[in-house]
Image 1 (cartoon, rainbow, N blue to C red):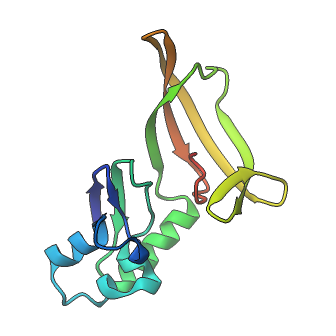
Image 2: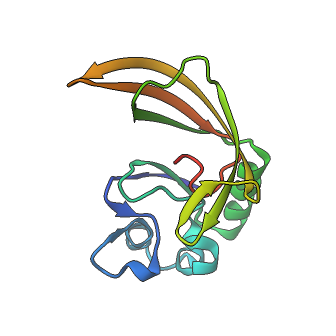
Image 3: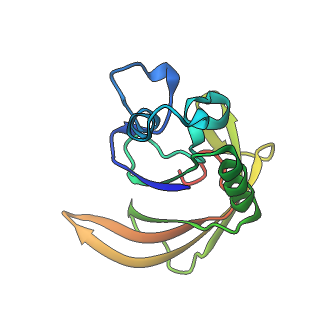
Length: 153
């Protein structure tokens, strides 16, 4: 089991991205060597258990063995592993909001909230407000409960 720090500007894994993008899975494979079959298995996401958008930085959970991969997946789905983020938002987020329940629906590469989407649960807490150069900002602590693709957007 590994916890990796993904820097901004890096793709977690995307075989169609070409060589111009820095790939986290290629870095892990190059660092740990070629004797771990999971790190060469695209069907198992090269041992990486989730993704972050390219501009984002953060921690990525990874496995070196198939047993660890399935154990970590089970823990993620059961909610035994928390995924917390700190986000700086444009505008004022109401401190009275604490949870968002929505249904995320994907149409091609874009996601939206729609009745036919998958249920998502996001908990959050506004920790600060600031006014910078005439604009309002909110610092928000977010916990992704369901872990749907693009849920945090």
